[in-house]
Amino acid sequence: MRPDQQQEILRAATRLMHGGLVAFPTETVYGLGADAENPQAVEKIYQAKGRPSNHPVIVHVAPEADLSYWATDIPDEAHQLIKVFWPGPLTLILQRASHIPDTVSGGQGSVGIRCPSHPVAQALLRQFARLKPSGQGGVAAPSANKFGQVSPTLAEHVISEFPEEVAKGMPVLEGGAADIGIESTIVDLSRIRQGVGAVLLRPGHISASQIAQVLGYAPQLPDSHAPRASGTLKAHYAPRTPLILVTAQELAQGKLQNRVPAGQKWAVCVFDAGRQPEIEGIDWFSVSNEPVQYAHDLYAFLRRVDQLGYQRICIQSLPEDQRWEAVNDRLQRAAAAFP
Ligand code: TXA
Ligand code: MG
Image 1 (cartoon, helix red, strand yellow):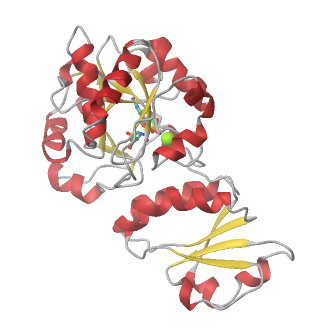
Image 2 (cartoon, rainbow, N blue to C red):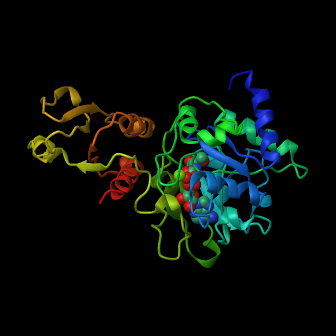
Image 3 (cartoon, rainbow, N blue to C red):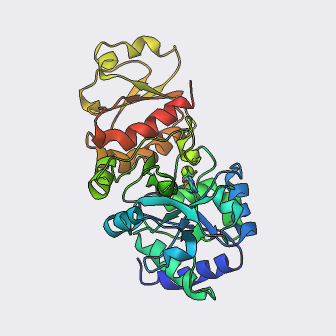
């Protein structure tokens, strides 16, 4: 964090106290935050994002927060996971405390809680908690993008996406490029007492096998009774330009070139752009062949390509192994937006 940012953080925390919105960096993606205990403030997030208000948002807390202020009936599994992964890119779904507004929980009996590791996020959360009479401050925040769009990994992404809010004085705290680049892993622990074990609602940087190592069993896949999560909608995280996935085999067989209509320009992302043939209508882009770096680069890359005005983004499909699970999840959802 920059030393001169303390003033800015105090101003942002004060704005939260007054029911305003604040955009802030986290290690995953930038968030669009409001006081989690103020339903009117949370409502402003939905309005700014154009997001249906029955979708729950994550409550962000500082490392020293009292979890029992936000959740009830906290199972041992939560403490085990928190000990290993907080602060960090893991969101836990727990039974909500009764004072959590419906606008935060999407009317469900649960609440999503995350303690981010980014120093600017932590400074904001700590400052906000200090201003609150209870000493507990929670910032409800989805990713700071319009509903269904790609999450922001730079402050400038947020500024370009919310010009009206910025013009109205919404602080956008600067935190550099988000380290991880894709949204947190979400684990549902809200039904442990009913005998339903941990459920992986959204894969992320913290993998299912890391969770399994801590819990002693692998988290389940969501069933029809699992809490709803908008990031788990089939079509989500999409750039504006239609996106398709192509296999390495299709690329190697030169099948793609027949698919580009005359006069169109397609952006094609592969591991080795330098080794591709020159083809009319195709610009090659290189992406990392390593999953952590790939995740870090993905959203900024999609935004950049979006701006370049291609008719289509083609992405070389990725290996199916666990290491690529989170990135595969985002790419498949992005492609599903353009059936
Ligand atoms: O990394 C992240 O999680 C980022 C940063 C800003 O922390 N936030 C983020 O928020 O990705 P959002 O709203 O874009 O995605 C949060 C997901 C949504 O799919 C939401 O439905 C789910 O968390 N969620 C939140 N509370 C929930 C609850 N009580 N039950 C089930 N799902 C919940
Ligand atoms: Mg989002």
